[in-house]
Image (cartoon, rainbow, N blue to C red; front, side, top):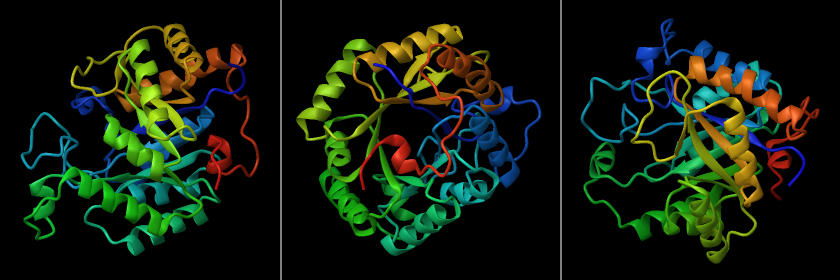
Length: 303
């Protein structure tokens, strides 16, 4: 394949390693806007396609009610973070997570529509389903619906507010591939190797997702310890080795990539300053953003 290879970055806390805070010496609070604006500015300096902002109903990414003292506790609302970042950036796409199981469609619709307006068409969003009893209890609900009921409700939710913003989904299994095929424009997948890439792409095609933009998630760490619990492929190597991996998976049919920095302060800059120039030298990455480009046109999905 030739042409621009889409590369995005996923932002979460101080990074995707659970103890990224230990490897961030000059920690600015993740609850303050300037922290996120600074990360987005670095990603935009690297001409990346978009950034995603993770979120959930629990204070830690573990999605459990118990607090683990080794993990960062406290998470800002991802949609509000994206809205805070939007006026400080000019080109990069902004894709926050928004919960759908216990939210009202009108509320999410207004928030995403506002983000799209203030970003001049650079908005997307990732619906998140809440499937645990302790998440339901936060809203005074005791019963937890079955997976099929949860996904059916999520599909209705997305259909009710479908507008200009790109809809993304994170998928690990066939049921979520089905949801993505009917309700999303873009799907993040987590293959473990080349054979897994082929198998997942075939499965997405089987469930009717031929028109989806398929992005592979890759956990990237350069100096901090790896996280063996990561659901995404864990990469540790040279910039050229990462480029080789991306190009190989692209040749197998992956449309783009979302890189998860282990430690934002270290690995995001490594991606921007070491990996992007190699992609540019190979003729596979842009040298400048197109003016007034919407996220929808950038990722190549129809209205």
